[in-house]
Length: 153
Image (tube, rainbow, N blue to C red):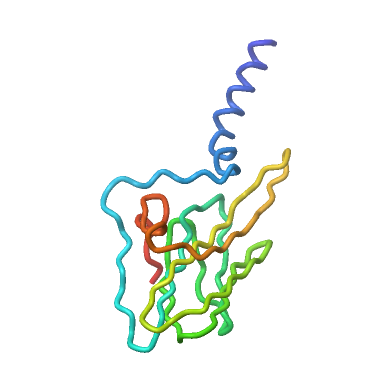
């Protein structure tokens, strides 16, 4: 009976290890191969906001909105180039919990916004949390951020 208990504990540890790793919000390992992110030209008189999700958990996919309505569905490991007029832009992420970000954008400039859905484990309960942050370009263009994200068409 004791052996069965040990086997069950080990099985639970193996199965739950990725879940607990995700709940701590750790960075994912970048995939092998070449980076997939491509910078795009910015149309004259416009600003470009790269909205990306560097991590994805379970089957939850957040929606991204602006004042004009839905922008995109943002699965983990993807990015969407959002072309907008200069001025104050409000972007928000919606899942079970919503958060927003307001950016004053300038024409001809590119901005990087990380929008993630993270699962926190509190006992047996999974609690989804959203985050949306303006990220400096030098920090966004790293292995664990936008470089290996795939563009949403």
